Image (cartoon, rainbow, N blue to C red; front, side, top):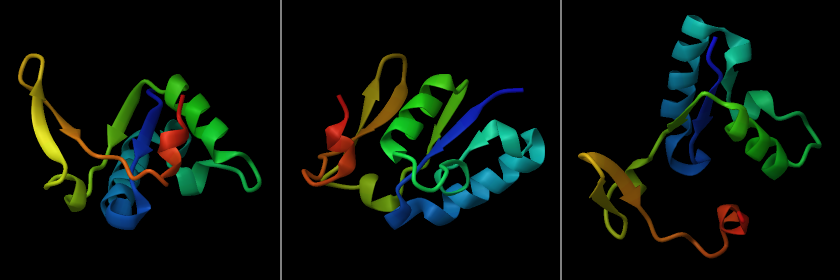
Length: 99
């Protein structure tokens, strides 16, 4: 079975991410889906746990909320018609600590 990692921002896409998780759990099983609030044990360093699980996943689903689909973010075409959302990062956001 595939390992599926769901990435989302709690501030704007928690509900659609939870609905996605629920559907995937019904199709693939609880143990195959990484969803932060269900998968990170209390007291563990979430940065380490997320990094390990992204690397061990077969698929990563990124749920992008409305604030990141509109300016100052902008959608761009990359490669063979694939689309990406390029956003200015908030300087205080934990993801800026990624190396």
